[in-house]
Image 1 (cartoon, rainbow, N blue to C red):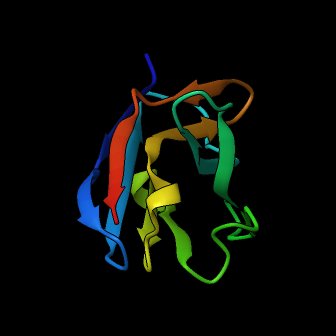
Image 2 (image 1 turned 180 degrees about the vertical axis):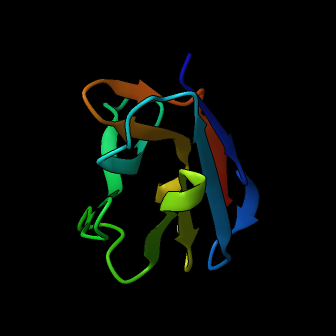
Length: 114
């Protein structure tokens, strides 16, 4: 049974920083892609950032230059360093890991106050 365990969400003031972590376990296969999505109230879930097993990254335009995604393949863990946070970054952040299947974490709340 694959499990994605997220940590690091919370409440921060605008301009502050948070780091999210997601540890994946239980898969027989390596995860080709790991990443983070977010969903704000009343909005669709959207890609924030993703990273392949070879380190290729992809970011939403709204977070470029502020967020950095990284991963530790040996630990099957993906990180999201979020700097210069804005109130519009407030959302539930979901970890995603994909190989031949697609897996999701339970979500962690990030709230940025103005």
